[in-house]
Amino acid sequence: MADHRQQFVNPEQPGYVGFANLPNQVHRKSVKKGFEFTLMVVGESGLGKSTLINSLFLTDLYPEREIPGAAEKIEQTVKIDASTVEIEERGVKLRLTVVDTPGYGDAINSKDCFKPILSYIDDQFERYFHDESGLNRRNIVDNRVHCCFYFISPYGHGLKPLDVEFMKALHHKVNIVPVIAKADTLTPKEVRALKARILEEIAQHGIKIYQMPDCDSDEDEDFKEQCRLLKAAVPFAVVGSNQMIEVKGKKVRGRLYPWGVVEVENPEHCDFIKLRTMLITHMQDLQEVTQDVHYENYRSEKLAINKRRAPG
Image (cartoon, helix red, strand yellow):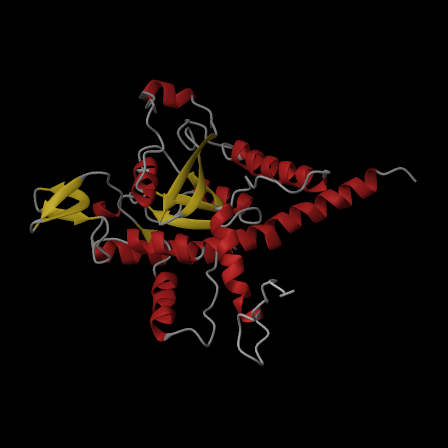
């Protein structure tokens, strides 16, 4: 009687185990599961935060937003608005949560206006800590804030006292990326001077902003140059726009002025593309720093407090 059992064929050549294929397995699994990322935007009203976020991800995160009047702003307290959107591009899904902070810095007395933001970040750490300590750890949703774009006004001569106070209070809890808003109100020379001034004040006050990782020595030269340019662009001077304008027969996202067009996605005009490239190429690192540094600090403190409270 003939044996019709199908013989298993080794898919690889002799002398080859096959674990070089592991990255492909990780890639397939990650793509299937999708990615999640939480971005916080903080800054005074009127700096174009919502417009920039919509421009960055080519989506409308705030379709029903109502803009409060001047009288309401005087009394307004800081609110926390979290909007989640599922974005899919070439089969890769991203669950993006953008946490906005309307009312920040708008009241006459802005003292302690960052406290609700601080509480929100801690609440997400607390929720993750609780889920991680629970029985069902398989489907933990990560709502921890992985990155905070902090918008700095282009109209001042550097950082305001509130900017310094906010960044000093939060730099141990979240990855802060400073952004100069509405850079089209400044000349290139003024942008360079403001960037230098902000970096000087950040160092002077001992503020720790997010540091992009160094490139590995085996990376290609183009990637190394890209990393160098991204690091040199901090703080990113950006312009946001959801308007499409025709320039030389080509549709571009930009702002139209009597003297010409500011193209949002032109690196010669502003750092918008650099900011988006930084966020996308370092998204994994931002999540790892959140997990290994900021969350780990919170977790260690939490465990130490629980230990002190434990009887005996």
